[in-house]
Amino acid sequence: MSEQRVRDLLDEVARPVPPPDLAEQAWRRAGRIRHRRLAVAGAAATVAAVVAGIAFLVPTPRGDETLTAQDLRGRTFASTIVTENGRARELADDMPISLEFTSNERFEGLAGCGAMTGQVRPEDGRLDLIRWDRATTAAAYCTAERTAQDQWLATLLEAEPSYRLTGETLVVTSGTTTIVLREFDETLVDRAFLSTEVSVGGKRSDVLGGVRVRLAFARDGELQAGVGCNELSGPADLSDHRLRVRLGTTDMSCGAVRAQESWLGEFLRSEPAWQLDGHTLVLTSGEVELRLVDVETREPFTPVR
Amino acid sequence: MPDPTAEETFTAWAAARQHALLRTAYLLTGDLHKAEDLLQDALTKVAQRWRRLSSGNPEGYARTILVRTNVSWWRGIRREQVVGELPELESAEAAGAAAESAESVERRLVMARALAKLPPRQRAVLVLRYYDDLTERQTADILGVSVGTVKSQAHAALRKLRTESPELAELIGSTQENEVSS
Image (tube, rainbow over all chains, first blue to last red; front, side, top):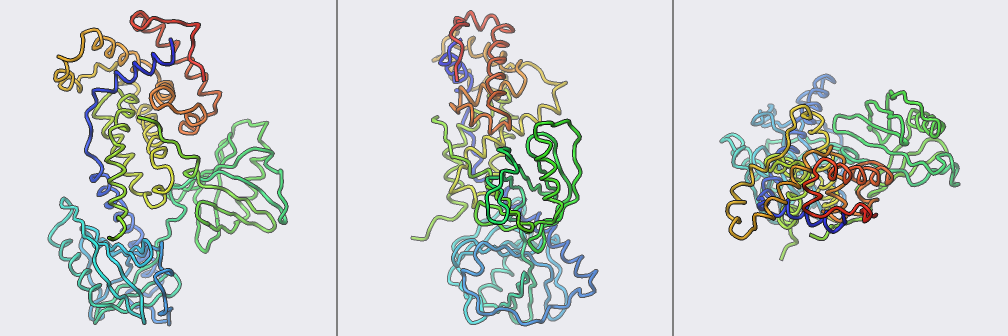
C-alpha cells in the first residue's frame, strides 16, 4: 500500500465535507466561557472579603495613581465589589464587571452581555477614554438586565472615572459609583511546559540526565507533573509567585527514570518561586533553577491543504 | 487605520482554516456532527488563548485538541461505536453524484468503513501522517507519544486496513513490499 495511495484515499473520504461557519461562534463562545470564569473568580474573592470582615468596605490605602498604559498592559481585573451611594449594587446574574488591558492603551470591558473594546489612557489619576473601537453583542445572552449593565459600564467609562491601583486591587470611581476589581491571574492556567535546563548555583546541572520534565497547570487548580512515567499531581497554590503543591503520585515501576522522578518530587515540594517571562517559566528553590518552555512554542507547522 | 482587534484576527484565521480542520476532524471521527462538535470545541479553545497563540502555532494547537479530545470521547463511547456509513454526507454525495463515478463512490465508502474499524490512535496516526502531511515527530508531539509508537501504530493501522478490508486492497492494489516509510 503506497504512501500516495493512502493519501489519495483519505483525501477522497474527506473531500465531500462541506465548509463550516464556526469562526465567529467560537469567538463568542470563548468570551462567554471567560466571563463565567471571571464570575467564579469574582464570587470567590467576594466570599473571601466577607470572611475577612471587610465586605462592602472599599479599601482606602493610597495606591498608584501615576500609571501609564504600559503598567496595565496584559492585566485583567474582575470586580469583587460594586457600590453606588455607599451601598452594594447588585450585578445582573451576578456576572462581574471585567476590564482587560490587552495592549498599549487598548482595553476590553465585559459587563454581562457583549464585549466593548476601545482605547483608554491613564492620566492624572483618571482613565481617559480616547475612543470606542467596537462593541460586540452575544444576542442569545443579552437579557434586558445585562444589556442595561453594559450601557451602565460604557457610561461610567465615558465619564473619565478616577482610578487607584494598590497591588492587585484596582478601584475605579465615578461620582458615587465605585468598582473594586482584583487582578485575575491566569498566566499559568491551562498551560503546559517542558523543561529545557536545570542549573545549580548558576552552573548547568545534569540531574535530569536528558529526561524532560513536563508540568501542566489545569483550570481546576491541579498541577500535573512527570518525567515520562509516573504522574505527580495535586492542588497547586500559585499565589505570591510561589508554587505550593500537595503532590500525590501514581505507582508504576520506572527504573530508568526513578531518580529523576524523586528529584522532581522533592523540588516541587520545596515550594519553589515561579516567574513567567513570555513563554519561559522559571522555578527557583535555593540554588536550584528549573527552566521550562511553554509547549505551545514548539516549532510551528502548517500542513499544506 | 487602527490595528485589527484580536477578534478580527482570530475570525480571519479561523475562517481560513476551519474547512481543512473540519476535514481532519471528520477523518478522525467518521461522523460529520461529531466532527463539527469537535471543531467547535477546538476553535473555542484556540479563541480563549488567541493572544498567546496568534503569534505562534494556532493550527498545531487546534489539531492537538482535535486529536486528544476525539480519543477521550471515543474512550467514553467505544462500546457503542458502529462502523461508519457516512449517512450525514448523503446529501452532499447526491449533489455531486453526477460528477462522481460509481467506482470512486464505492472506493470512498470502503475506505471510510475501513477507517472506522481502526482504534482511534491508529486512525489519528494515519490522518496526521498521510492526510495532514505531518512528520513522525510532529505526529508524536500531538498524540503525546514517542516517535517509535507513531511508527508502530502506522504499521499496525496499514496492516489492519489490509487484513480487515480486503476489498480495499483489491481496489487500490496492495503492495506490501512498498510499505509506507517515514
